[in-house]
Image 1 (cartoon, rainbow, N blue to C red):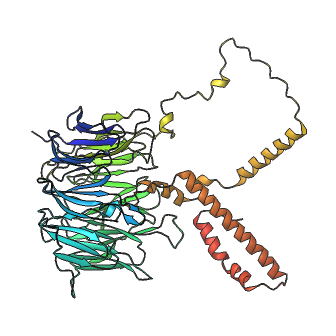
Image 2: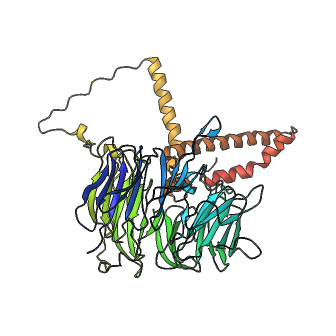
Image 3: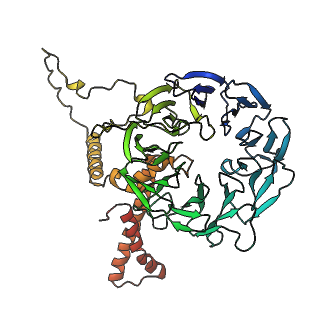
Length: 586
């Protein structure tokens, strides 16, 4: 009998586990916690255990029976990790200080069988970097610390057996697969020095030639490292907070490739613009990238960083392999319209499409045939809920939340590798694939159920209706006439100004970056972006007018001061910046 994955759902209604698919009807709430303060939840790697914190205690239960196997009184827990063989539970709480001193240790590791606390320390790191990383057999556990990575053996946390010491280490990723593991670390540059990513093989961290690969970057305030399934190479997205060219308000991204053989190269992308999404294949040494100014481009690359297939351009900002590696989904989420398309990886043909507006979370089911989309708070506080789909675009289950209820997170149950096997992909016959119809005009979630008013309702005349004569216009007072002339002049001036909706391609791309993998924070709304752009454009135009006045003074023979001459030299850079904003100055 095939395994049936469960879906964990967390929100203001509490926490519930739902059964399915592949069954057509979900078994709702076979395990639940009604506390509205569930901070975090986590499945074990094999999916047999499930842990969460409900605001009072931490619980660990068996997923098949919901029987409690471990309970802990840690009410502020915000992070949970279960070791690969279900031996240990790591917990993390937000760091707090009172009068400049930490209140209590906020990082703990417990033995799930005995309940013994194996390690407890004060960990100041943010939530995305706190997690300890175990090898699959739990023989080695790594944890990043200040300026070093500590390695422990066989879950003995009394003393580290190895240290990887590099000044300013900001992130560390252990490779998947067999022991000994490979270790990738990133350290940002300081005082003009470049940042770098280095690959090591445990436990060779020092001495000449210890690094398997090394690559330096001058435009990298932060880096996102992603190992491939074979543990032979990493992809590194480097993010510069400021784009020196002025083409982007949201920094600059570059993509790099490093292999354990020492090879390193930049991944050449054929379209300029942001890098929205990357994903390694779970079964092959290849990857997909979604990149470029909207409409974005989606490309498949091989292990030599050579483009293998172009999926075309479309308003998309996400790309995902399914867990079996035989289907790829490209989607446009965040402030895009939620259009999804599905491709057969082997045949490289489109096999399905669907639309899920307002999606903030997308997750493939472990069976590789189904997926879940969700609208979660705080990204969107209206219309929260989740849906279950088939890759052919069929909606199988819809679970909207009630008014004022919020959904925070959903997670599929995980399974050991090999639990599910690929099934025959039912691709449409040639010429029968139908693209989804063009979406209707956007309406906010809270207004979608309201009846729309007929725009011609006011002018509708029933049979036999006698139109009333228009009432004579009353003469306007002098004050009213003056205000009317002001309004007309203002409307005329506004109609002459260039439209903000067509000012900048960058504005539309910034909105599309709302679900970028490197920026978990919520992206600014379109209104905020428009206001900032208007403000910047007005400032630039004001500077150009001042430069024109200085030119007139210079032509009339008036000597200019040194600072005024410097202003004249900035004219070209100002015009270039306006050009980047697609604004013509007249």
